[in-house]
Length: 296
Length: 201
Image (cartoon, rainbow over all chains, first blue to last red):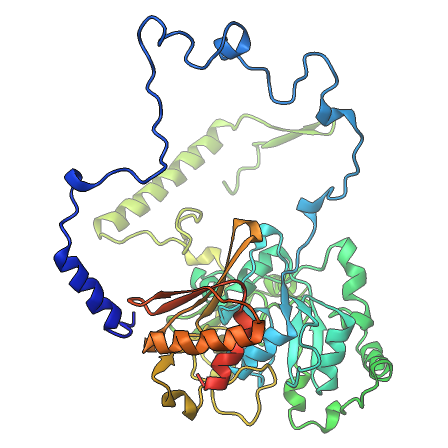
């Protein structure tokens, strides 16, 4: 708290010194306050107390809300269109704009010399998702696309065409990837997950209605054919009219081509491994059957 | 229960599995093994060893003998540990480094900020302490500027002149001198932000 200029404070103290103390004897109600009438008890004061004469009013047995004594009730009288049917089952991708992403980069909250994914963005504390609310990850939106100037290797869960163009125009790469709810809990807070001492889960494949999105090279889906993706990169560059920077000539080429396996949820860490934060070591199971399970 | 060949645990009839009553010899085996199990834990108890559990206490069962689990290879390679450290959150908010340009429009405080009788400090995220409060279902909007130091009345006068010139309207402002806050009636967040940038805060 900052104690700004002392002028007003001193005036207030000076005034307080001359004023009498506030106590029960010298306070009164605020002007205009309603004083509730008391419930009368005598011959005419104690008649009905606002409940009226006879009927459900007096007996306080009101009809249920909306009931119209035999008519079809108003709320059932007309047909309706279920616009939001199934909304509680749909996947939600809370938005993160390119402007916000650029601001995080400008203020050094994100390190663009390393690949950026959901874990890294959640770790900044500036973006949160809640899998209990059917949130499945980041939707990167195109607000601030024209001012976006960073070269990043980013993985999000949903991205539109102008967003992909804005990232690739600056020499970056973008992947859209799906995480099932169980892996999502680990991804959004890796530290908490490691402290549990559980094996890193393997990532499940997307549900049926999401497979088309994540296998589409135009969306830079993580299950799409890499050759088709490089073709689509060229197509998008021609559509939006920019010179596509050549990835192979980039000094950060090794960083830009880092991708996760479709079964992997943390970069560089394989499913089935257990991370021990206290002893700073990684436990890798040697059982062949277990290895096969985590890699299939 | 190994070596128990005469006892049939399950009988199949018409696609249904039933649990058959366990014969006497098997029952003997079970009780013997169970008592051994109890003895084992009591032995541990008298040495005051806490039985181990997994980390999520309520959900996990007691950890059994190591023979139940797979062998592990323990890796302490620093190359692999880098991938773990990448996933751990920073315990502090880093100070932004000076760059030649900031495409997002964010600016660090400049030298000219100290030439005024007042000062507006950045918040811990290095942003302006400028907030929009929406009440009454969007009917009532208030812009709030916090963390004001120095002569708040001078800031009030300067800001008022600037806002009235920009918006061509009378601006209602409220000063909370003790806490160093100023409330402005209406949504003037972007204009106040421009003013703060002009002043170099």
